[in-house]
Image (cartoon, rainbow, N blue to C red; front, side):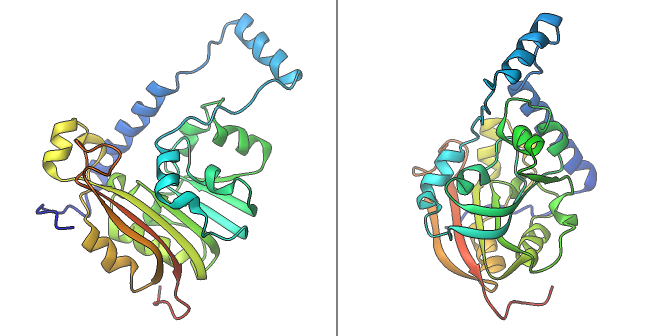
Length: 255
């Protein structure tokens, strides 16, 4: 899909940190801290003791993405290690994990320490139960070993990062040969971002040709499509939506 735009694939550390501050403030506004009065604390304690607390997962279009990826039905039912890079406060991997056996699940996001304070959300509760591990490295500084994950998920992340191409390289690096990669990405141009007023939190502009050039040499596409503006989740904000689900080729490329 030709975007007719000037791409911005990397930004300065300062610009990226400004975007992260915007992102953190946005999600805090959506997840205000619970009341800290003695009465409120007592009520929460009683609910926990009675087993009446449950995760309220929230949703950042996670169900919409799942639908566009055909419910992730092509992914295997059993995977040893899975990770979501740039997981956000609500995560997509919680939906992928439903009905599947995953022995080790990671949620990675530079803002994950903020998200763990959202007490009623799935991520914080899963972490406190010990069913999810967390990591706070930027994707560009991914600390995990090469060829170590059966599943790598990166959905609607690349417009928030410091260096989009490096993030794609890191995602490919940590997927094992034969492992799966899920990439979903809104595609926006300068006019789209100006129209929504969200430029502060979205410093990167990437297009489907750039994504194809990074992914197709490394992965065998199983699901690969670009939705039009009208098919997307927010036509005013995105001229297209990129969907990719593939398996890492056995020969791969050197890290």
